[in-house]
Image (cartoon, rainbow, N blue to C red; front, side, top):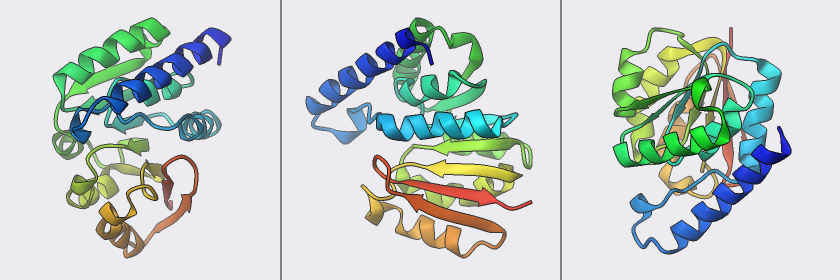
Length: 190
């Protein structure tokens, strides 16, 4: 990562944190991934070199930029305003050409995705939807692929049912890393 990009990301994170502090409604916040979690995502992608990467939950593009530094990816958010904010940030970071932005419901994108289409999926959307998305998440994740889920420790009570579904699914290995808000790493065995 270049020093200029690192400085841009530091400022974007600080701006997001300041913005969120003034927003009483959780849904209006940017809720950016913590820098240490973003750095881990970037390292995983850089080391694994997946051919296809999907992010569900773009917000203002903070985590998207971290990943786009080392790969091309598709990112999905259902909020047109956030998608426009993300577009401006991707452009400012110099990674706009590496990112396909989709403004749509994550469930629709998952339903429309082919079986085993995605080698790497980063899930950072509304946690209440994860259980409903689970059948499609399993279907679209490639054999040998990784699904990374944020906020599993900071909002553990909101992902209990989802984690139970993961634990009951054969052919997966998973672990929780106490980094940032907690990352659940799910590997689909070949």
